[in-house]
Amino acid sequence: MPYAVICLDRPGTRALRDQTRLAHMEYINMHRERMVLGAALLEDEDDVRVGMMIAVDLPDRQAVDAFMRDEPYNAAGIFESVVVRKCARIFPEEDRAHFDNLLREERRKAAQANHAPKVA
Image: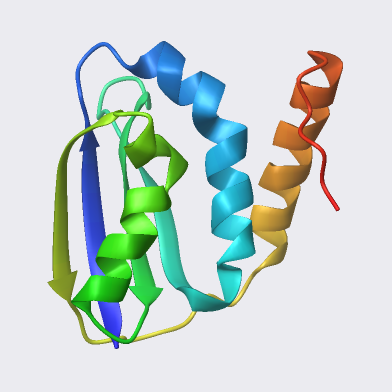
């Protein structure tokens, strides 16, 4: 069953969000087969990230709660609010290469900063 999850950042967590981004992307990548949609929520004026919206295909609300408990942005305390609702899936993701490119870039940045996690 698809669930929509809308998360809004706490004020003042931009630096923590940036520091946690690679861990977040690795976590999403580990659960990619369950992801229906993923999007960053942006400020209207300057495109600063202020939250995220995902649709995840999990069997029930308890599974969604467990997924979100371990999600790195959430575990780091970045979110001020998290709203979970069942949803009706209308269309799937067609272009998976976009996420691969974003993840590759974050891994490259982390490696340059000498903070790359060990990836199997």
